[in-house]
Length: 452
Ligand SMILES: *[C@@H]1O[C@H](CO)[C@@H](O)[C@H](O)[C@H]1NC(C)=O
Ligand SMILES: *[C@@H]1O[C@H](CO)[C@@H](O)[C@H](O)[C@H]1NC(C)=O
Ligand SMILES: *[C@@H]1O[C@H](CO)[C@@H](O)[C@H](O)[C@H]1NC(C)=O
Ligand SMILES: *[C@@H]1O[C@H](CO)[C@@H](O)[C@H](O)[C@H]1NC(C)=O
Ligand SMILES: *[C@@H]1O[C@H](CO)[C@@H](O)[C@H](O)[C@H]1NC(C)=O
Image 1: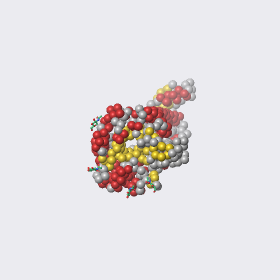
Image 2: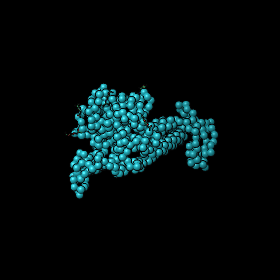
Image 3: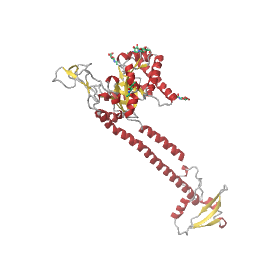
Image 4: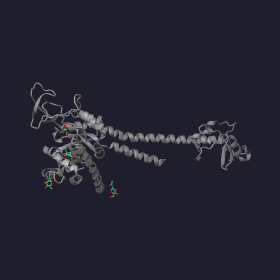
């Protein structure tokens, strides 16, 4: 019994620990093209930093990094860990634009997938990355492309587990960056494979509108929009309804906005006619971060990921995001403490109840044996032996003087022999005893009991 309790406690403690240590992810992208030095990243504001971007070689299908990037990527992890030794890094693999065809060709052939997978793991380990991210695949290509993507994730995951087993190191994290809508043109991401194989998905919850694509202004990363499906809340609900649990999603936050050149400066609301962007790349920083972080928290998502870290202005956005996420961490901490405490108290109460009920039960048996009362709920106790007064009378030869062992405070004690030969001692409450029934019962309670 005690052993069971201890192992149950250990089991529950490990459960509580695993749920409690589930980090609230505060991730950020760093892109070499930003020309922002990795040494300048305040990595203490993040749990994970995503380094971009590696590519897929069009002839070998191996992961490749351009030579200038290679010098930065090779010590990226070392550099960001100087300010925060616990920050984890992921190497991101770009599949957009001209790289999309490489991705498709790679996934369509098992041998190409193997080249890609093996080289990605090898390169990640070589440079000390803790994980890999596939970036930029949209769901709306043909069904067979999506099926191939599912195979890729299955094979990638087993290769990662195999490598982890051989190298005796924790497995690499495997993630993808996903479009805010998990399906397009009736084709969906390979959701079962994603759920099975990926640690989480970074949801690209922005770029709903852009000055280069549309001739009107738009909210490019709206959390809600009742008049259109182009908003984060709609996308997250789609992901959930297609089978990805909220706790496998990390909400993308854009550390930029867009500016439009208005056709008519007086017509300047959302949806106003516009001609391209104002600034060269049309982007600027903005600060509606807290609302989104608290959204991620309320929906039970795993955390947030910012695009991109260098856009932060003196770290005000990341500090705000971190601040807003703290409640979440505190809640988790609270659970990590409360759950085991609650469990221990519940178990203690349970054990005490069990113990006293058992004592009570034995006490009942004893009383029954001595007083010859049949317990009302005998059927609940199959081991219970009950004796009638006549049996006791026979066993003690009618309470004969020869059988009398002595005299207690409130009555004589007799030696008896049951019909099956078992010897018993019988205490008989004296009618003339001045001592009450209470003492009698108390004494019964303190008798050393042999279980029946
Ligand atoms: C792909 O790999 C081959 C063989 O290593 C190399 O010669 C070629 O330059 C690579 N292509 C690109 C675009 O990096
Ligand atoms: C990173 O590595 C490159 C060479 O790979 C080196 O030139 C550079 O100084 C290193 N940076 C830091 C901060 O260690
Ligand atoms: C969905 O279909 C439309 C029209 O057939 C096409 O223009 C669009 O590119 C498709 N979307 C994707 C993501 O493939
Ligand atoms: C998807 O897969 C088919 C064949 O399975 C291929 O012909 C096509 O080019 C792939 N890419 C896209 C974008 O559909
Ligand atoms: C891990 O490696 C051991 C021996 O090295 C092997 O017995 C075991 O099956 C491996 N486990 C997995 C999941 O590959």
